[in-house]
Length: 129
Image (cartoon, helix red, strand yellow):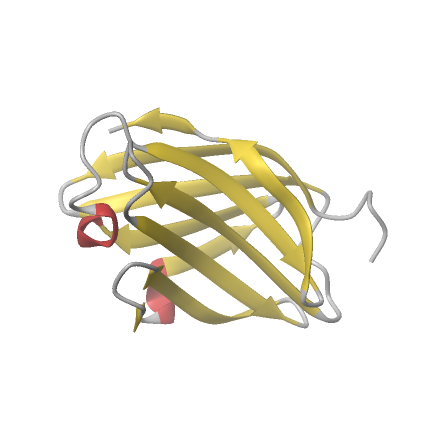
């Protein structure tokens, strides 16, 4: 995968009922071969609690939709029906519980990975929570 494929262009999140709707706009399309992951890293203001929310693709198809709580070392997998993608936009409908407890003033960035290696990290997230 070249550095020009599937770069994050814009990432936004919004609250909708009990759902955290995350939109990942990418430059290009989801790679049709290999592994590709987009997601969010969120932490409490003092960084004592951190969560990683992700959507994983293999050969262009979503295969995993999850959140991982670092301080409790627990992972929760969600039904893939919460993931949609069209053209260059990937949407994940995470349960709001995935970030509960982080409090006001939390930090959130986006990331992408390709074939098991970091591709982009610390990407800004537009929040409307």
